Length: 307
Ligand SMILES: [Zn+2]
Image 1 (cartoon, helix red, strand yellow):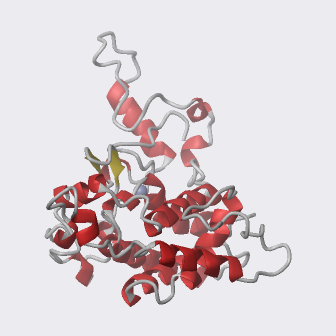
Image 2 (cartoon, protein in one colour):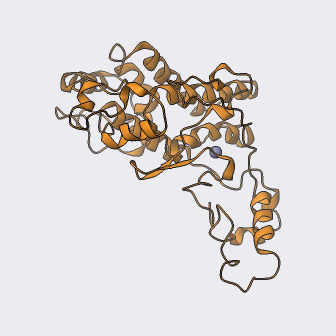
């Protein structure tokens, strides 16, 4: 990603400025909470489902995948062969800080994947964010205000800041401390084969938070533990969405992948992300969650992820 921005309007180096982005003032961060543009143009989720989405019929086509050549062309179009003299013209084009020195390599523009996404890093961040939302750490007035600003999930909007969080329970949050305790207990009881990963007994203590988890632990929790531990604790549609998300992560981690499965799993990832968009808070959808949908394209070009 050298020389490219990873936040803001062009925060996705593959979608560039065509990514659906907005800056959330209450959350004070960039939010990428629109996945319907990746779905087929006649998919029912693209319609105005006012409660779940923002009441807008999504008609944008999926953004084409940007290549190194596209970035080079963008730079050349903005800067030209001569270095401009005025300070305004010296500003880099949108999405870029500078032109990477790698562009001097003769083969760089021909690479299909010049920027390799790190799946383990993405899985860790998605898992961490999902855990925080399930435990209610992210359910605050700012998150509810952002729902109001994005015009979705009216039943969670802030009416009275002092009592609104208690009066309308977020469907992605465990109801009370007893449920959190039960959730932790279930995670600790899950038996895994020798060498699968670290023991989680010490990480999930009696208190309502966790500690000392490594990247690989978050990854294991996302692909195996969460969808088992939440059964019966949430609305069945939400549980099913998390199950489908875990299945996607397990599929991405496979050492042997059949070529003909890739397209169907990619389409499945778009549907799962749209379902999560309907059920989760907008605060969940940061840049890392957005990158999940691009891992399938990487696999189609590079093969299975080596761990
Ligand atoms: Zn993207």
